Length: 211
Image (cartoon, rainbow, N blue to C red; front, side, top):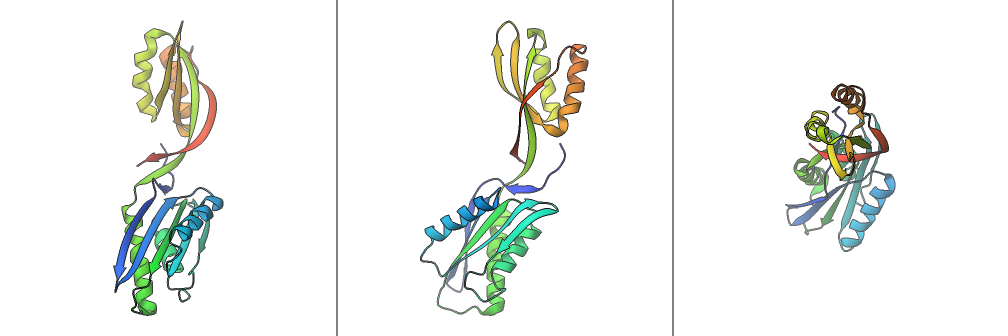
């Protein structure tokens, strides 16, 4: 399986307190700008009474990304930019982060704000479970009964899984495996069946796999 950029597996929320100011960092996967904006709007609504809701996102990964940040009323450069720097340096893509601040009554100063927002971002980035976004084929394969166990043993070699087994005159399997493994899997299948078997791809989609 070829490596791809990493994405958050789930939404995560952690809190960081600095001189009675509360910094609540919420990180989630987002696979489009619209998804990121919807997430940001949800957090702003949830914490409507907060002093600030500082949003950042990176949509895409590797060399093809769309980035966004806002200071949401904090002094320029003290919140959104350092949070985005943490996200950018994390290796994550398709990720959106909102850091909510409840002011604690003590001014932190420019340097203190940068440090606090950086640390809040690092908390969730370093804790969240990570996965990879990959393309997979869902395919059908009809096999004789005597090959079932051999096919079951074959699938893990190609990072694949059997999604369903339908028993009739033959066995019809629903399979899923990474697109990158397609040619190698077909070759192994031909060798196993003396050239008689071939999978029929019925769907190609993207999914997240745990690392």
